[in-house]
Image 1 (cartoon, one colour):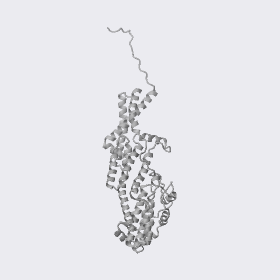
Image 2 (image 1 turned 90 degrees about the horizontal axis):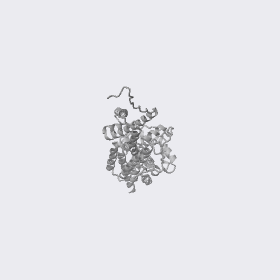
Image 3 (image 1 turned 120 degrees about the vertical axis):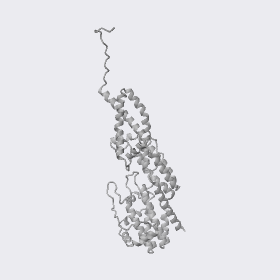
Image 4 (image 1 turned 60 degrees about the vertical axis):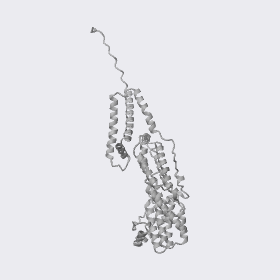
Amino acid sequence: MSPPDSAPSFVAPAPARASLFDRCLRGLARLGLVGALTFLLGLAVITVSPFIATAFEALISPESKLPKLVGMLILLFVIVVPIGLFWVAHRRRWGDSWLSLAAGYLLLAPVFVWLAWDEPTVRFPVSLDELCPPGPQAEASWAVTLAFTPRDGKAAPRTYSSPKFPLSAAGPDKPAEWQAYLEKNREALHTAWANLPERAWWAELNSFAVLGDLMPARFDAPIIKFAPYRSTSQLACAEAGLLALEGKGDEAMDTVLPVLEVGRKLEPSARSLVRFMVGRVIQKMSLHTARFILDHATVSLDRKARLAAVLAGGSGGPAGARRMLLIEYAISTNYLLTQFSDQDHHRPAWKRGLFALFHFVYNPVATANRYGALTAELADLAERRELASFGTRAAAFSAENSRPQFKNMAGGLMLSMTIPAYSKVLDSYWKIEDTRTALAADLAK
């Protein structure tokens, strides 16, 4: 039986509408949750998919051939995924209550804490001051080594003369070819050496008992220019070789010994691989020139004694090979620990905030420790001259870190691009050591 028309009908009261402030706050909270999920999904996709990983590497590699592809992938991911997640959340009415939003944040918080967690201490600390002691008159001698280098926003103190002289395809390590080159270009080489302005600078370099290096542990620090060192060494060795061919053994040795002395002095305090190898290149050239002089002219005992003393000084041997690796490690570690630091108050606030977020993909101390463990292993191999094992281990390490990992993703990729190509440098180092050792042994007979 239907109720009479006059009976009152029951109407449920409309739910109270949330305030505008509450709706905006919940929207922001939901948007943050979507962003966090997108970020984690992105890490997972990059880690799992080799194709996406290659595209991601292209984003941070200056040698990439896929800039348009990377841009499209990143753009699509950044735009489409959050929009899709936000739409699904809206349709499913996820996050309508503060309880569900809080539950989502509580579930994600441990993951982000784990991603940002870093190792507490650097396990392989290396001090450049201990590794490369600057020695007496460090500031003055360092300034002379940088004579052709712009510094502190100022032009270089000296202007390189860029001497023009005939170049040789073969150096003094190939004596027959080098002798032919010297005899063919005798007058041009004599003239270039006689008119070389850098001779006075070289004499100033050699006036210091130690050539200090005060370069800070930064990749953008001032560093010596190779060209003046190379051309002065080349012309001095050519002049010495010509004097030897003319039978003037002592004059030839007097010409090449300052070259070798500077090369030996550059190495012990070197705080960069560049300076270390400049010193090595100079040594190689002058060592073979000294051998050429001894083979083609008579040299007095006092000159031979001076040569033997130079060969015994400086640095070298297994300890030198180890130090060569540790120099680069010290600078690279400083870079890994400070490059993306959010504690540098000289940086703008927005950049410090961005670097703080970067901790979710980059753990600086853990990255430095992985690099330190590798360097310790490689340094042992370098000391023992196990070149094949050295190259194999370095290549394996780069391969291990070339695939992005879910935790410390940026750290692994940075390490894959940080390791220098040491194998050829180390091979050259030991060959130069062989030349020095053999020459010293001959002088001792």
